[in-house]
Amino acid sequence: MEHQKPFSLSLKAILLDDENRCLLLRRSPASKNNPGKWEFPGGKMDPGESFDEALIREVREETGLEVRLIKPVDTAMSVLPDCRVVYLFMLAEAKPGTVILSHEHDQYEWVDVREIQTVDLAAQFKNVARRCAVYMMEEQSR
Image 1 (tube, rainbow, N blue to C red):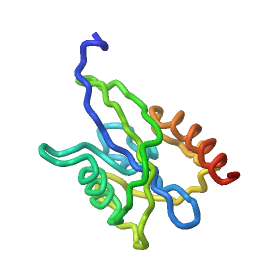
Image 2 (cartoon, rainbow, N blue to C red; image 1 turned 90 degrees about the vertical axis):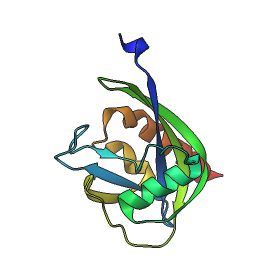
Image 3 (spheres, helix red, strand yellow; image 1 turned 135 degrees about the vertical axis):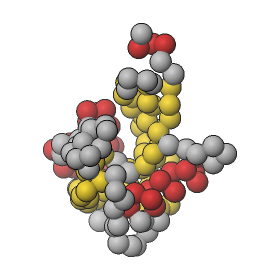
Image 4 (tube, rainbow, N blue to C red; image 1 turned 45 degrees about the vertical axis):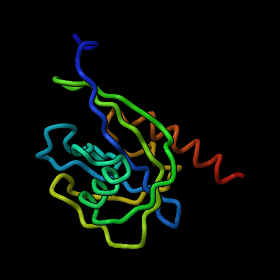
């Protein structure tokens, strides 16, 4: 039963550049989960690793970029055959650099936050994208 599956935590970055665009990554066709779908950079913590270290490491491994974490902004959940994955989204800034993708992804795109909802995101991230667009527009109008 779904409610008896254990929870797993995945950390995700809503990673912005200096033009207020968000970095999205497309899962490679060989991916076990969501092949060809777009997602936010991030992943799981290693044993003994702090929250900050894990997200900074995951973003570096997937993109080659260094980041500065700002604050938590959202959550989401998906159900896999063996667990329920809870995603914690952190707003982050990308330091200047060149994106170098890992084998997990085959394409990246910097997307204006107002357009993020139009991208073919994995289902569990669609509401996050919508809320992110609203949040960022509210922030810009202040």
